[in-house]
Length: 377
Image (tube, rainbow, N blue to C red):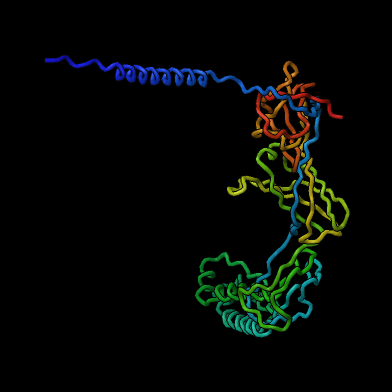
């Protein structure tokens, strides 16, 4: 029986394949070790950059806001009674002095009913005088004088005091007290046919025309006081730390080309959940001002010491900024404190004097990036 022949070619193929696999494994291990040794990103291509040296100083914090004016005092006029609007000057733009009737509603029917009720009340007192004189002679003179003072066309006089318990029960039994207070409530309701101006102002809008029927509960118009206005502005929570009631405000109208001085009158205690801002109310007075006028306002919110002003787009994440290292001319990230934001500027603290800052925003910047600083002119 013959022995199997040894296949040299097969052995070479096996050894060669194993060697290739081992070589691939070694290359993979070396590459993974190289990736594990991550070092700082350092650019070997320098970029020319304008820089400026930081000079911390005391900076006035001004918060810029804007909005439309709204009258400080304004009331919505609603009718509490039904009747025809009599006065012909109930029109938008009509001015009224304090105490003057803004609206007069026809009260002839209701007034006649009230006169009749007073006359009936007089008869009730007259019928009761004989019993009062007989049973309570000490009280008779007061009630006689009360009866003489009653005028059907005028409000009832003050009711005489009734300290005697039996007399009080007698008056209640005759429904004298009940009728008296009913007529008093009618007299109060009669006053609702006249709406008087609580202050000097103007009808900014009207919902009904003179001579038309007014129904109870119907809106008649809006009455505003001229000269005193309020502007609602929204500020950030960060700016709120520098605001307080009474802070001075400079307001300017582009249309009127005039400046006005106002104050912070109120600060809302809640934060708008949508905008995460807080409403601040500014009070301003001026003859030329009108409700609805758009104004730009600058609130003086105090000062910040050892601070600098930079472009807002220079901030990386609202908490840091790039600086240029004097040792190796590379960009370094420095943590800062943001004091206040404006439209395109930011007031920050935490930068020492002389630290080099890029003048403009750097596209593709990263920590360790090589730069060639040039002093900004």
